Length: 583
Image (cartoon, helix red, strand yellow):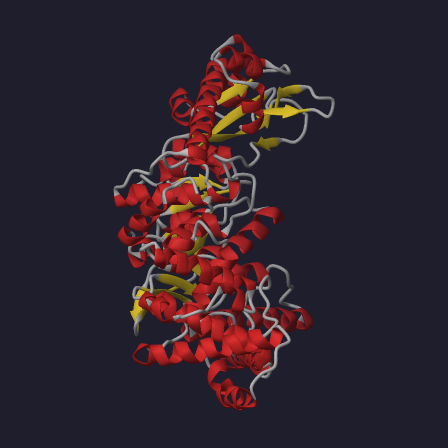
């Protein structure tokens, strides 16, 4: 491992998991644990748990879990070394730079420096004869000021196959580096050429002020109209938002979500400095959780066409599950916010913004638009679809208020609509109950790990092996009482591997917290171990429980080896089997 293990032990000790997680998730104490909405999947009822005693997190909905390093890897989508670096910065520690760690860091710094030089090149081209077409587009056609162009660092990629390539090579960068940064493309014939040609360029800047990628809009009729940087080691479109580096400093108390670069830039020019845009992709959970750090209210200001409506419908639940209050702006008299501001001015847009509908009213309105409510058959279909949507709302007050609104729109009694919503709500409850009953009727399946990548061949032995690990993780001194138990005795290779890792760490006098294993186990294994550790354990009887578990493991190992089992041991094992399965 590139990072010294002693450093990792100290980092884990300094990084209290609840403090780290609470900077991403709102946590509330219930019993011994802290609970919140899972940041890794959509949910409305908290199933995400943090144990300060065991220093682990576990989601009982999606199954993800682990320690503090693993959490940062998952939430920030970072490799191990980068997650350690982020945690170390938070803890005021300096990561020892050795081996592959140092090489990776230098490569990232090199690519960031290259992107900054590329942004300077594009910006300089805009103000030269080679950028005349781009200047015409930005200044005259789109009406941007010189100040806003400078603020966003806009530029032009000139016509030609190797303008950027030549300029960057003159500064000492190689073709391989331009390829790795996504600034160049390698043809099938081995020719390397500029990715961006004859395009207006939009630098994508992260929260640290680093240029991590680019978007480019064509200045002719070629396709695609918009071209974005590919994902690289410094850029991922699902984890970054255009202009968030600026919008996070806004004092307007909300974030405006737009569909593209120009809408966002036009809003900033008009004084709405809280606008952002996703980068050539639909809004993701990562985007939503990123936004939730900076705002409690988001206004979706997508185009009013079919694609914009569909994108808004997809974005609403993603934003809502993070705790953000969601509103939807319906642009009237223009196709998008940019065109509206040009036609009616910033003051009119501000009024429109303040009249934004909450997402329930918006969704109900979108359903209503699909039906002719003067036709009885369509009226019935409208009410059924509306009831299905409203039945998903967690609040009975919301169901009643918007059910009444739907009833009024269709000209029926609110009581009839309330009955239809209640029928649909009860149907959903019954369906969920049946699914749970089916799961409960298959105990053998429930005893298997949640992860599809790990399966037990010997359930009896594996459950005892889980018990051993649970005891060891909570009370490491029990390693001294493990006797001759070896990893080879374990029926599950995964559990045997973890036992070996923990025993070695204990023998070396090092941490045996789950978080300390983040560099040696993958995310699936960490989630599984968090599931194992989350189950209750009785420490007052720990030594007796350990002896019982080891007895089961060794007996099953003998059976697998084809050895004869003592009849008395067999009788004892049968008596204890129920206890062992209970963990």
